Image (cartoon, rainbow, N blue to C red; front, top):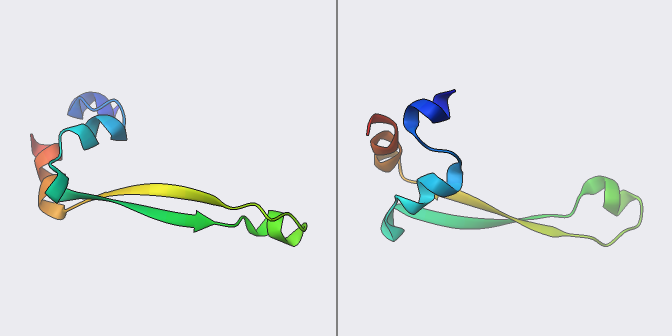
Length: 62
């Protein structure tokens, strides 16, 4: 419901409205403890998008 109010369908839509200097993409490596404990050598990299505080308020308040 909140996304309808903000007119943002998903996080990718919000990120397209933000200048490069106001956002960052951070890669996190997840080895999956259960997989490692089972003897599998599987890792994945998750990309987390971060924005600065002033831009967050701009997205919310319009």
